[in-house]
Image (cartoon, rainbow, N blue to C red; front, side, top):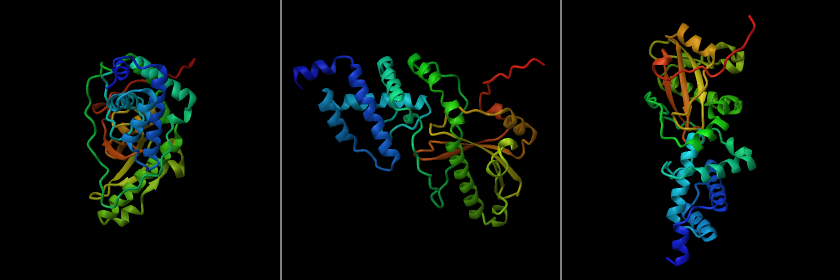
Length: 281
């Protein structure tokens, strides 16, 4: 390693370096989402030649970006597991600049996921835990600005794709259980009747034929990404607790999986008032 390399290695990253690194990260993520796994080694070499940083330093910094993406409920690049040990002020500022210049980066383009025959997308829900206090303030501020909960709720295309995915999962589940009679009764309620029912899909338990009123919540983020629950949905979960079930679809852009939450929901998630309705009567 040359004296110049040593000096660079021990110095803070400049805004230019952070901007180039963040742009490179999103280019890799877009390649991955398009089904073209990026060759990271070549990218590290190319970026290293441009900014004078070692591949290991670039890889670690990319993992710091993954930590920011995870906090924002965004898909992060496979193989770059989130790493939180960093000075995040300058890096978060670079991510924010990237979003300002490329707003579409917050809404990654995804293809319709395919359920592999015989595959099981269901996993256990994450346990309820104490609030994390180790998230750096620059990331907390960025999350407040680009709220993943509100963003997922506004993204109707993502919501509909998630519902379509669950519809296919339910059809395959009942078909595999040799309950074609029940499979014919599945309905996409939110599409056919509108969003006022308090659930999205009518399905059935394969063993008992009991109705399942499935509310679908979809995110491209990881399993712990928060989500909105409407007053109507929460009320239905209490009124029809034996039938209601919430399907949380996560990591939708890469490897979609599902966990189920059954009432009482406040035993499984922390419910907080997100919006107040103001009136004069």
